[in-house]
Amino acid sequence: MEYTYENLIVEIENKIALVTLNRPQALNALNKNLLEDLSHFFDEALVDDSIRVVILTGSGEKSFVAGADIKEFASFDGKQGEQLAAKGQQDVFDKVEKFTKPVIAAVNGFALGGGLELAMASHFRIASKNAKLGLPEVTLGLIPGYGGTQRLPKLIGKGRAMQAIMTAEMFSADRAYEIGLVNEVVEQTELINRVKEIATKITQNSSVAIRHAITAINASDKEIGFDIEIKSFGNLFDEDDFKEGTTAFVEKRKPNFK
Figure (cartoon, rainbow, N blue to C red):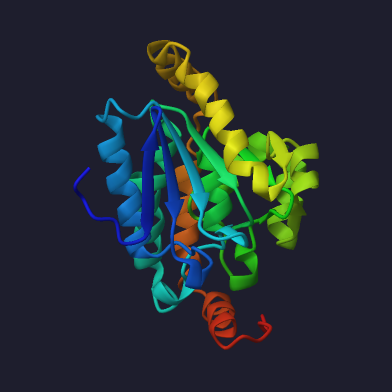
């Protein structure tokens, strides 16, 4: 791959691509450039025969992805907000979910907002003990816009998803394991080795069969919810609560929602 990634480190070994989201100064928050890098990587990896499994992780020991880069969209209106969600889902999150090679999220720390949405779009998740997972968008006067309202209930149940999204509470790694949000919890130092071990097992099986399995499993839960999420996400950009929530975030204070 000759494309130069600004915010990704890609290492390919034994048919496994270890993809590290690399914006450590921003706790690997998803900005426009990082999303473009991810979109490009998945396009390339789809036709790259040297890749049979993809592992996504974050750089450093604190954060997988701490969320979306709020400063990039704090001034957006409703139409721009809707486009942001639709483009992100089309270019990255849906692409990850529908990717015909297995994608495993190695959640090595905070997976919040867009970070948890990226982990949930992956085919399954292994977490380190220090991981914290949650969807805090309502504290910004928003809802999850990259598939969070659709994927979270399918993984942990509707009631738990309602509570998690409404309270913006974070799950510890152990709690995430208890409710089925992650498949395993391991020590931080063991995380990548464990995920590579699982990936190696996968590479020994039929890639054609796995491709069909991914398609069939994904077909079991298709609804129109994503369209509703995108529209609602966009509409919220025109509300005063969004302006107050994002301003408070940037000013590092508590929001005062009317």
